Length: 386
Image 1 (cartoon, rainbow, N blue to C red):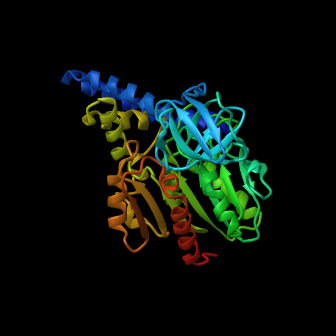
Image 2 (image 1 turned 135 degrees about the vertical axis):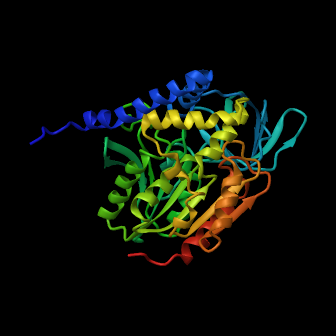
Image 3 (image 1 turned 60 degrees about the horizontal axis):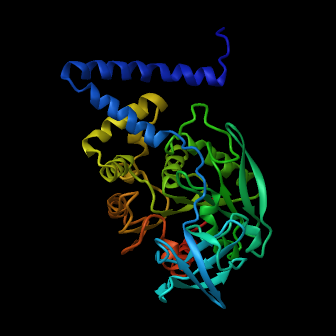
């Protein structure tokens, strides 16, 4: 009988064949005089796979004045559009979309959330529009829980509710659970239990053995653990919310499970096709888009990522779950063309909210009430699946 193989050893063994194939791939390139393309592919793969070190928080704005329900800010991007958070390290507030120049800076409507800044504070605008401590602003129990997953315990934010349909939030690459905190209070008001999860390589979560992102390929197993967590606590079905790369995580989970137990999906600027997304990122970095296939080959060789299986646009005919899709035309991180094609391919299942002039994962910030109403109406239409 063969000896049992430790999980890490099995992982290493599975990768030997892709690495050998990468060697053959580079060997084939050498006679063509394009080995440099493979090197560029490796560099670009590093850019998308490696987990960057935590960066120091920068506070580029100065709080000039606080007057009643108004705050005046000075600094670059103080007039950024949308309902946003204002973070000054020791406190957190919200500012409104109606920015105006008052001669000393940019005046914006101010809402304590839960705090108020003081003149002289250094601050930054924050798209999450909610503090990391959600309990400070949500009139409900906010619990820090541990989800037992494939690599250990993953921290998650859990807000109980009376319903048996849970909403599970999956944040994007380089983001955190707090990305969900804009929408989460609205679904809690509807009575749904809410779970904002972490996945491998997040702060406080287990690191991937290779220290790399799986771009949704490996993180889907972490999401599976979160859905199991919900099911074990009474969830009859779930609605999955995926932001940016969280959309790739959700899509791969649907592929793996056939959408079993998933009543619906909400996508916000989702990565639906890594080929399209990498091509856009290449253009943003001044790298010829023709090089992105080399990065995909390297990522497959290093991490076993099957980009063809992650491509929800190419595989749209396999979709069996209703989807509410938000995407803005000003998104410079994830191409809107992928969402356009996905929605067009499945008009029977995809409700598409296409937003002019809205940036990456800023649909809620652009019009919070309209966003929440769209989600509420979508969820009310969903039938039970169990």
